[in-house]
Amino acid sequence: MIRALALLLFFVVTSCDKGIEKSQEAKSAIVNTIQEPKFHYGIDLNFYKAQKNKIKRGDTFGKILEKNGIDYPQVYKILQAIKGKVNIRKLTLGKSYSLFYSKDSLVTPEYFVYHPGVSGFTLIHLRDSLYGNVIIKPSRLVELEASGIIESSLYETMQKIGINESLTYYLSDIYAWTVDFFRLQKGDRFKIIYTEKFVDDSISIGIDRIKASYFEHKGKSLYAFEFISDPEKGIVDYFDNQANSLRRAFLQGPLKFNRVSSRYNLKRRIAYYGNRIRPHKGTDFAAGVGTPILATANGRVVKSRYSKGNGNYVTIKHSGTYSTQYLHMKKRKVNVGEFVKQGETIGWIGMTGNTSGPHVCYRFWKNNRQVDPFKQKLPEAKPISSDLKIKFANYIVPYKTKLDCIAFESELKSEIAVNNNQSTNAKDPS
Image (tube, rainbow, N blue to C red; front, top):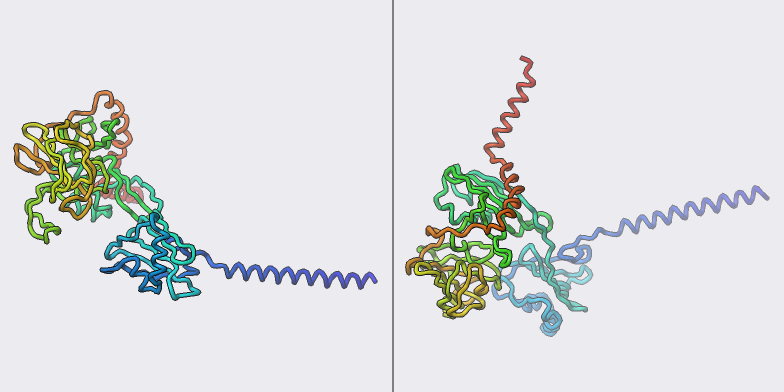
């Protein structure tokens, strides 16, 4: 009897063990069939097939959907559902979009994604629960360092050492009043500490700003440190290591952070006028619509009006010698007769008048003659106020130390050669 019970127990345990093994095998098979998500614009490619295209001439959101099997009544429903949430009316020629089809049904797309750049995209769900979202990818600021020795031009040097070429414009803006970048000499050199924006950890979406720099031109050393010179107005400017302003009595441009998109050029070809030569007697500073435009010096407003070519514009007389003008404003803030101070907002960036993009055209007169402001010897600006000098002196210490520690390529090669020689001598028994 005992023997029979033992046998029975053995068979039960064995059966349980086999059952457990089979259960584990089944679980393992289930786990193995679960696929890792493959997200693309937030959509799992395990379940959808993507078709990437580019916007062609005449394409609209509605036409694209109709060409891909979605009839107009449904297109209308989609447009009503996303109204006020996403703007899909303006699609840029040549930019990319993707249609996502369910792998169960390839008849009509389920998602439309417009992705003109790397910083974000517009996603629209086209079936059942209709919705649209604008997704901005998170970006991070990275502080970087660079150095270079001029061989031909600043731009080519930037390219050769593999850094963002747009730093050329930022650096030339900083030293606009002290260095003639059209007359750089071979052997001139620079060091930069700057911040750059990245998405997806490795894709650059542009330079943020230069925090500090060193430029050696014709053997003369020129430091530059970013500093808020007017805390009340939030004006940021650049000063040397002795707290002297790198600008003159006029701001180097009419924006807080200036980016020159087109310089004064009497032989410039303008696409807006059929690529014909038309003198460009202004300096264009690019920025987004709504960016505040600042008076570059103290003065009185003598014009504040609209014209067909200039759009909304303001003219300021600063003295018997100097006047400035600001074109293509979205809106003007000042009226004729008002006295404005340097750095005061006089209007906002727009696209009024003859212009192909948002910017302010800055015009400069000296003795009633329109000239290039960057080539004039202008009165020096006032230095940092005495109550900010101590703060400035403390602020620049870590940046100056960093700049001084950045080596030029020739210095690195010399250091490597010295180290190699020392290593060889150490090995030589003689």
